[in-house]
Image (cartoon, rainbow, N blue to C red; front, top):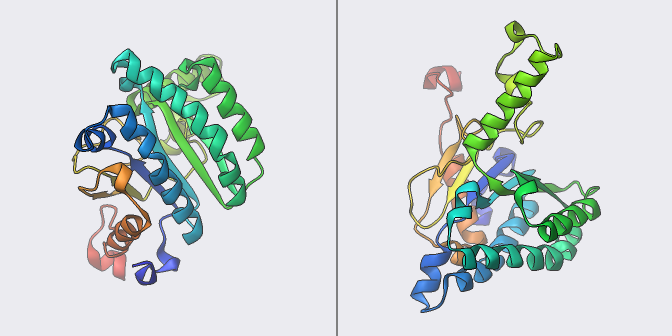
Length: 245
């Protein structure tokens, strides 16, 4: 399927809702955390696949603000897994010239997680083949509310004129400031909802939903999603004649 991809029409930014780890583990008769551990290969495969093709930005929805309400044991296991995974995958990021970055309220993460993230981002800071964003303790509503607060402070302190604010000005206050909006969203496990992810940024994002559970997602599935994206007509409110003419 890789040969069917038009490298001149690649999405610059792909976002992924990695769903189905718990269901995958249940099918194996194992605890949910086993599914999260088994998902690491999918993360590695898709990250490398995007970089090989020439995608410039990849954002993975790793942990939402709502995920804090999960059972305490699962949250603790996820945080421990995050630390060990970041530590072990830095060499892979370096080998593939991939820069690591984050979006979300990372200050709410355990100090050990913050330390590992900070060190990994510092090590990979000068890589420029692709940027991998991990959305951690993130939600779209949190992002928009946080942006509104920062903008309100600038207005109150006369650093921003309210009458001159447009969509781009507001976007500059979001956690994704300076990053193009995702053209393609991939959601695994067949669920058909946005789950509070990049609400502002995905106004015109194309969705690809697959029944494949995230631990089973591989490069061929990525290629299928990109081919589907390339076969669509993106009109942005216009009609076909305007787009094609």
